[in-house]
Image 1 (tube, rainbow, N blue to C red):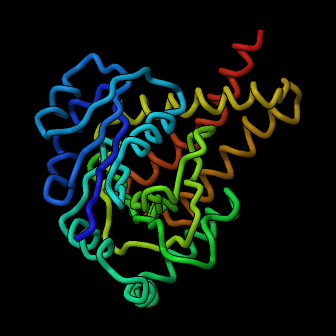
Image 2 (image 1 turned 90 degrees about the vertical axis):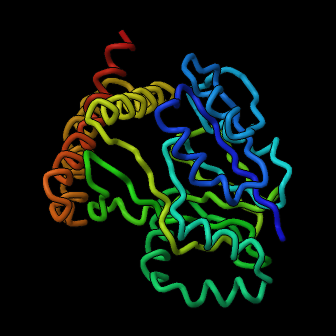
Length: 288
């Protein structure tokens, strides 16, 4: 039987970590947590689940600590999670099956995924944005997981939010995070497949948590503008104040049918679109 390490990076996640670790306790051979010097009970909760814990700093690009957790893992397979994610029972069962399949069984499994067309369409969008993902030849060494995002009392299924594929299950030594961008994909040396069952992402149960997370992305976009030396010219201002927010709202709410997610769909599309003008404002203020 193949062994599985669950690897996380944490920082002040006492409200989420227990549910996360509870969801994987039956499939994890080991739990590795790299903590960014939490000031709450995060480390105490992690210890209660027998996790191996490394305390370090909390860098703005949190993928740095995720990669540290991956590097410390000793199992053949690694499930990389965020503390606000929970592995559903069906996904747990699927992971146990997949990591023990032969290569022929994995190939057959990928060919017969019920939602294969949807998953590959989403993957192509990611390739368009990020570049190639994995290789077309060789064994399967990483898997996307479809993710259901919880937003103000509802799991969002429209607005381009689902399947929100994220590479989470990887084979040791065959995938790593570049650690240069918050939206980056794993670099994978091998073929990338999909799992069928959903990873539950308790992203934004309250509006205050949503704003807190959104503020972090606003800050990262502002930093990217600074790093690129975007300048404070009319062209850049028009792009970030008008083009990007309007385009985002129309794409998510109309084209991708965010309106089918009730009022939560509107709130998500509208306030998510505002991150662009907010980031530009922060950038110009910090550049004075």
